[in-house]
Length: 145
Image 1: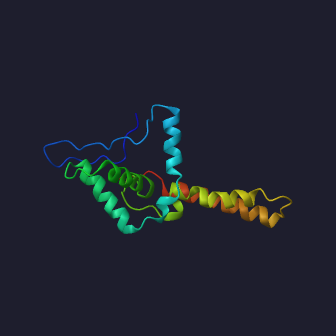
Image 2: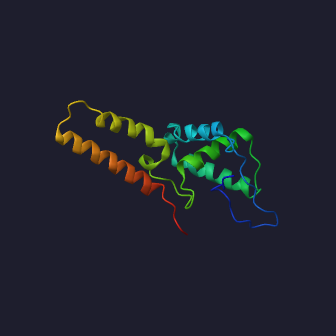
Image 3: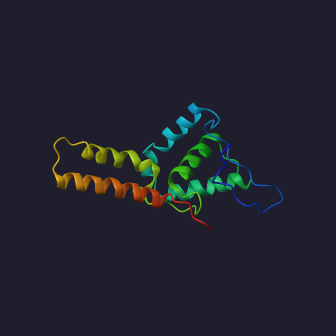
């Protein structure tokens, strides 16, 4: 069982409510669907206002202050998981989000696969690949509070 990065401290008498799982992490297929969902580039187009609204909706659900429809909760949960850092709850810089991996990595991969590439091209695409990997690791690193 995976710990949810959205747990909040309880401020009232009742404990916080965990978000319902969107995929079954006990099975390979469920974990695969979760990863495909994380790589979906559509959340890259979410506005800052939409991210704030999703964060408020998820926090309201967890603290039992609101009870949104399952569809609204699932959409908000996806935005929070894909766009906000799990430790700080702040937006991750767009190119560093997991959702941005494929739109950025595919052109880099194609650049790496150029036939008969010159030394300058090889150095450039290797640098791009390593820089992108380092940026992804930096943007999604665990942060101690």
